[in-house]
Length: 283
Image (tube, rainbow, N blue to C red; front, side, top):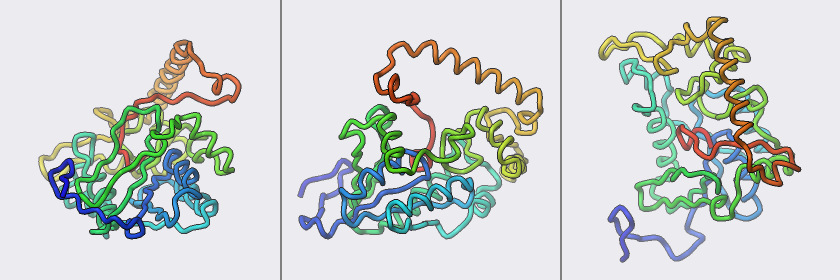
C-alpha cells in the first residue's frame, strides 16, 4: 500500500459510494458560496456548522437562509461543552493567536468526532486569490479539496455566486465586520471592535467581562492585543480608531491602480488576498 504524507497507509476504498462528502460552514461568505456552488454538483453532501454558542445573531440568520436555499438541514456540532466551561478548564486564560485552544476544542475536535473513522472528502472554501494552505487533517481517512482554487474562483467570483443565488453577503458585512466566528474573536481589527460596540453593545460588554486575571499566573489577557476593551471603548479612542481606519481606506483606494474589469463594471469590492485567523471560523 502507498503511504500518505504523514507516513500512514493509504487504505482508501475504491467504491466512491462508501466515501462521505462534508462541507464545513462557518457562517462566512466563502463557505456559503461553496455550498451554493456545489449544491447540484456533489450528491449526498453533508453540511455542518461548529456552533460555539458565541456567534452573532447575524450568523445564525444567515445559516437559516442558506438552509432554505440548499433545501437541506445544516447539522450543528459541538464538543459537548461550552466556551465558558473550557475557559474554566484553562484557568481563565483567554485564547489568542498563540493559544488557539478555542479552534482546537470547539472546531477541529468536533469536526473529527463527527467524521469518526469514515472516509471523508472535506470541501474547503479557500479561493484562488488566497495564499493560505488551509486545514489539513492528520487523520488518513480525511482528505481536503479546494474547488474554488481548482476552478479559479476569486473574491469577486464568490460575490457573484452569492448575489446570483439571492442569498447575498452575510448581514454582518453591512455594518463593517469582515469575519464570521465568535463575537470576541481575537483576530478582529480594532475597527471591528468599534463596530461591535456600536451594533451589539451587549456582546461588547460580555467580551469585556472576560478580561480579568486568570488563576494560572494572575495575568490579564486582552482580546485586542495590549489594549483593554475598557480603554478602546472610550469615545475619543473610538473616534481615533475610526479616523485611522478611514485614512487607511483612502490610502488603499489610491494604491489600487490595476483594477479588473469585473471591479470596474460590476461594482465589486476588493478583498486582501492574505487574511489572518482561524480557517474553520472565518471562511
